[in-house]
Structures are given as structure tokens and as C-alpha cells.
Length: 560
Image 1 (tube, rainbow, N blue to C red):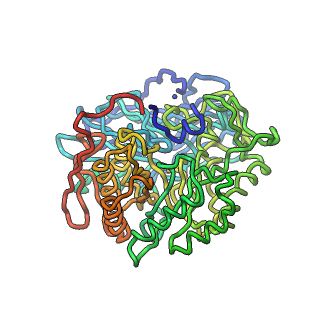
Image 2 (tube, rainbow, N blue to C red; image 1 turned 90 degrees about the vertical axis):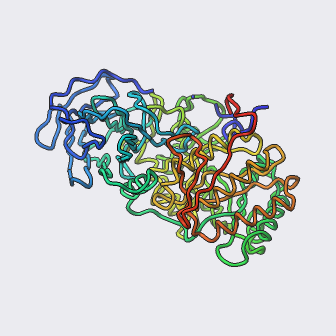
Image 3 (cartoon, rainbow, N blue to C red; image 1 turned 90 degrees about the horizontal axis):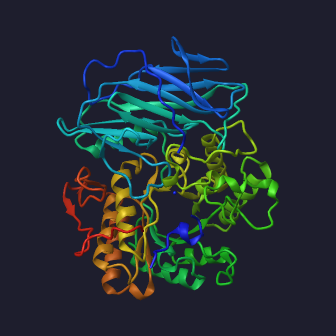
């Protein structure tokens, strides 16, 4: 049986053209270093436009690079940061390529991030020259145990990724609009700001990654305490009801600590146009009557059948077109219709809103399909004057304004590097499962291990739920729940009523107590040894907790 993920539930269905790089003319770094000096002028700059797949190299003049119709400049505040600007009033610009020559030390290991959620694929790996490393990357030198980090400041105006090969480092900045070029007009665009964490010992790889995340996001927006509670998705899978939600609410009310932050009861998809949910505003009140905070799931960017086609993105913008309709949020009327969904649930007094699917709806691809390009070519938004990153960032800010300061926003299938500082919480990995443990192992544990450094530096991390059902071996789920609680990140359980006995109740109560305390911060120890680390060290008492993620008969090698 194929396990249900949220993508398959909705019937959704995985690179950019590359051209040979012109040889750089400046001299590479003289020694083989583990720290890469990129907060300096690049050795090569080129652009790509909608009208040609070939690179157009730019000519350097001081801090500027020029070609007919375009100028790129940098502002370097070494050793802290380097800002990149572009002025191209008439060119339909798609990508900018920076290149630094460097003689890399052999044997380095590299970690990259993901475009939006991760999909079980984060890891330190040997050099793979064609590997796309979105947003930031870290290097680890096993011979010296030094780890260094490099990245793009959050809130950039481009989708940025890194490449590393034996001769140097490349930064690619996708400034496209839809799958075509952006028409900037007479404005200079601040494309991105580069930051790095230089060669310093931070005590652990996790310490370096945390330092890098802080450098990338100087002003995160954080909830006041740990977010924990229940979400019905991983046992109900959309077949939920008010009665089921209130049953879950009563369970978490009974098992949560009597003092400290109150738990949440989050209603996931299935409530829309469902007679089993007669009055959503009254349901929020009923949840609150249990001294539990109500939360709800929405998908603002999807349009209903019969919507005026002029308000929609073209179907061809989807990599796998189906019958789904997505708003073009650069059209004021369409944008208002999307934002109205947020306004509605906030008006019902839901205190946490999980908004989903906007990356897929607006860009037409899942993160694992993007490769070197966030979109497929051949389409554009109605407003062509802004980049894809700017359009998403503006949408996130509009959601924030509609939600107000009192509502916690949880982004799912949103771009964390753009939402940091706007949303309090972010789903950092693809769906776990209440039906197949292997999916939880690959997606949940992997994203927690390699993105836990983003917790409380970008936002509060949500590595996804513990689907407590009879399909998942309880000893494995219990460990997953314990680790989530000890990590200090968000903790949501999906408790199937037929799988909750005294043992499960006691374990949930223990995990809730740990989460509510807000003092635990576990970090992976064996992060170089496995994509799903089993040794986690507590920053509270220094104790190391060991977990066994693998069934006795081994792991499932088939797609999940």
C-alpha cells in the first residue's frame, strides 16, 4: 500500500539549462584552504536573460561589472557581509552568476540547505560539483575538525544557490519572474547579501550552523514558548469531524502540564465544506473552553472551480498540470481573495494558522523538483516587475498583516529563507506518516537533524507530527516523540483513538511536560555518520540520548 502524503492526497504529481563557464582571469587562492574567502570581489560575473540561454560575461570596473543594458555592483563590509545590486532597466533578466576561484583542500565534506521543505536528502557529502545547495552551505574538514559556513541573508530578492568544485565556488541568483525574465524597469534591485562564519571553533558542527543561521537572520520572529499539542492529519487524513477534534482536544487538555504554556489543538484539512464541521467559530470557542488553544489549516492560494480565469496563473506553470487552479497573487483581486482566507479564520479566533501549498501553487513545483530552477520556463506573473522571491516575500508579509500580531503563523510548503522574520513557525521537512514508519524516519528525523540550527534563529522549527496509529510500531514512535520534545522544537501528535492506551498516554504526558518546560535543546552528535543521527546531546545537562530508528529487519528501500 502506498502511504498517503499530503501531495498524493491532493492528486499532485519530479533544471535549469547550464552553459560552460568562461575561464576566469584572476589568480586562485595560493594555498589549499578549508575556509573559503568569498567576502571579496568575485573573479567572474555573468548574466542570463530570457532571450538567450548563453551566458553574457560582464566586464569589471572597480566594484562594478557591466555589459550593454546592465550594471551589477557590490558593497563589501568585510569580514561581515557583501551586498549585491543590479540595475537592468530593459533586459528580461533571469539569472546572475558569481564565481570565486579557490584551491580547495581535498577531503572536505559539504552540507547544503533546501529550497522550501527538505525531502529526506540533507547530509554532509563529499564534493559533488553539480550539486545545488540552496541558500547556504557548510564545509567540514575531517583532518582539522573545522567547520565553516556561508550563506545568503534571509529575505533576499532572488532564489540563491551555491556550487563548489575543486577550482572554486559559484553563487547563482535566480531573479526570474515565473519562468521568464524579470522586467525591473528604472530601479536598482538589492539582489542578496552574502554572509559567512569564518574559521573559528564553535565546539560542534551544530554550533557553527547556529552561528551561521544567526548571521543570516538578524531579526527572527519567535513565539513566546514551545508550541505543542495535537494535529489530526496523520490518523484522519482529511476524514475528520468536530467530534474527533474535540476528542483530541480533551486528550491534550488532560495530558498537558497544568501550568505553563497551553497546548494547541490544530484542525488540519478536511474541515472545508464538511457538514461534520457545522460552525468553525463555535468550534474555536469549544476548544478554548478546554483551556486549549485552537489552530487551523488553510490553503489560501488555491482557487475554486468557476473562478474568473483572469485571476489565475496559467495551467502550464505547473510541472504536472491537473485540475487545480492557483491565484496569480500579483493581481490585486486575486491577492485579496487569497488573503481573505486568512482574515476569515483569524476572525473565527483561531490562534495558530497553518497555511500550506503556496510554493507549489505559485511556482508550480515541489522543492525536490526544482533543482537549479524554482520554476519551469515559458510563463510569467501578471506583474513582471518583481522577481519570484519578491512576490513570495510580499505575499508572506500580506499574510502577516492579515493575521495580526496576536496570531501564530506556521508556514508549510513555504520558503523558510523568505519567511524567516515573518512567521513564528515553519515546517522544515516533507510529511511524516501515520501509516509507514520509513517515511517518518527519512523525512522527520533528517530535517530535524540538519535544520535544528534554524530553530529560534529563523523561527520555531516544526519537523512534523508523531502519527500515533496501530500501523506504526509504538517503540519507534515513542522515540520520535521523545526526541522532538527534547529538541525544543514544535511537538504535535496525531493520536488515533484506537492506538491510545495507558502507555501512550503516559508517554505523551511526559513529552508534553518536557516540551512545555522550554529548557531542552538536543543536538545531533553523529551528524557526519548518518542521514538520520541516533546520538543526540542535551544542551541542558550534557547527557547523550541514544535512539534506534531502524526496525530489526532493516529499512525499506522503496519509495515512500
